[in-house]
Image (cartoon, rainbow, N blue to C red; front, side, top):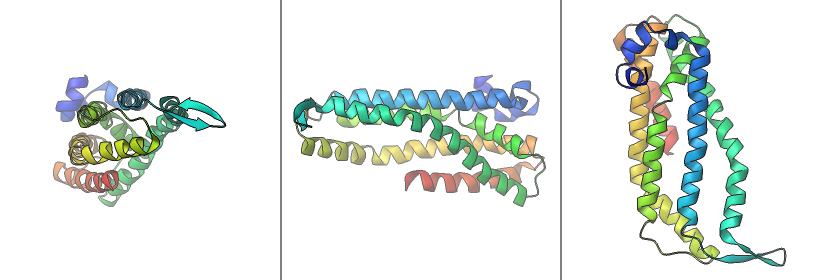
Length: 210
C-alpha cells in the first residue's frame, strides 16, 4: 500500500478502501507528526555533540547542552500539533483551488488527499537532518554562547541550499499525490487536477523557504 501511495497514487486513489478511510489518513498525519518530533530530537543530538560549555544562570553554573534540551523539549508538543494545524491549513488552500476549478466532493475528501500526501515528508525530513549532520561534522566543539550562536548560524547557512532542494523534492512529491487524489475524489480531469496541485504546490513551496 505504501509503495503504491508514493509511486503510483493514481492506482492508490482509484479503488482502495484505505484511500477512502478518513481515520487512516488522519493516522498517516499522526505518524508524520511523531516522526517530525523524533527527527527534531535527532537534530538536537547532532547539535549537542558540538556543545561543551557552561553558563551562569541564577548564580550557578549550568551546562549549555542542558539549557538547549530544556528549550527543545518545551517545543515538542508545539511541533507535534503544528503538523496537524499545517494539515488543515494546507487542505483549506487546496480545497479553495479545487472549488475554483469546479471540482466536486467535500472538504473531508480534500483532508484525506492532503493527509495521505504528507507521508513523503517522513523521508524528506531525514534528508534535512542528514544535511545538518554533514554541515556540522567538521565543526569544532563550542564552549561559549557566542560560539554556539556562530555554530547555529553555520548550520543554517550550510543547510540552506540543500534545505531548499529537499523542500522542493517534498513539495513536488506531495503535488504528485494531490493530483491523482483530486482527480478521483473531486472528479476533475487530469490536466485540471495537475494545474490545481501545481499552483498550490508552488505557493506552499514559496512559503516553506521564505
